[in-house]
Length: 107
Image 1 (cartoon, rainbow, N blue to C red):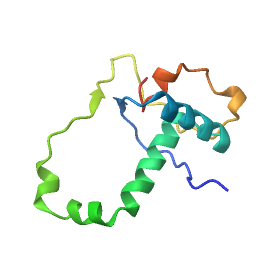
Image 2: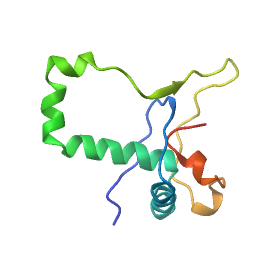
Image 3: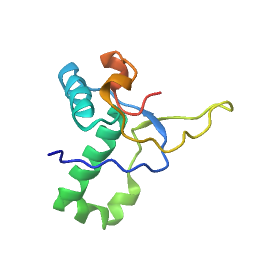
Image 4: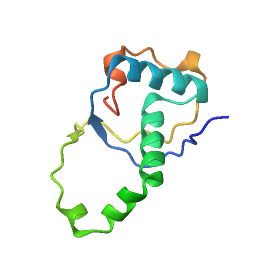
C-alpha cells in the first residue's frame, strides 16, 4: 500500500539536485503509485515535514520567518500557463525523462 497520496495544488517550478540512486527511486515510486516524479517529491516532503516535531516547533518560532531562501525557483515565461490539475496516469503514459531531469519540479 502506498504511503503517499497525491493531491494537486498550485505549483511553481524549482530546480534541485538528487543523487542518481535517489532520482531512480523517485521514478520507481512514481511508477508504483502511478503519479509523476514531481508529485512523489511534493508528497514525500509534506509527509516528512508533518512528521518532524522539532521542525513543527521551529515553524512557530520567529527564526522560521528569517530564513535565507536557497531553493532556485524558475520564473514562468509569458507563454507558460499553469497546467490543469493532473490525474494519476499509468507508468507507460509518463514521458521518459533522463535521471538528471527528475530532480524536483524542474520543467
